[in-house]
Amino acid sequence: MNGKKAFAPRSAKIRITGLENYTRCGVALKLDLVANLGQLELERHAARSAAWLFVTKGCLKYSGDLVRVTQIINGGRNGIGDRRERFEKAKSVLV
Image (cartoon, rainbow, N blue to C red; front, side, top):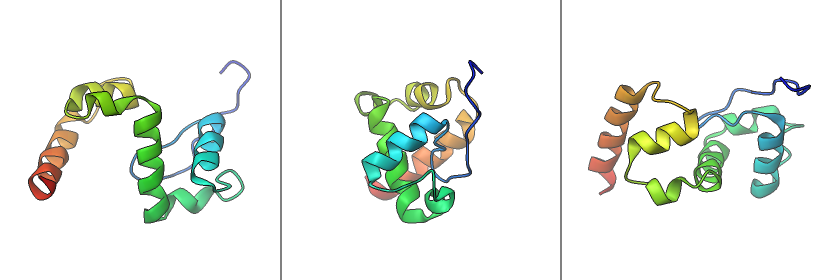
């Protein structure tokens, strides 16, 4: 792993992985996520961290393209069927 230690604490919504990402997310959210690993399991922080990653990865310009956003966040199409169902359900409630 290029001398880097794996770092992927449990978190909700979109999982933040890697110590560098965890640290950057914490700075953006004004939270010490590294010292308090369970914070992203709390709904309020999980939602904010998901939004942070979505924006940081440039997903806003593809916000209607579920497949492209999935590829950006996950690197592939794993779970696309389930994700599509959830996306459509959310759209029906929100739009």
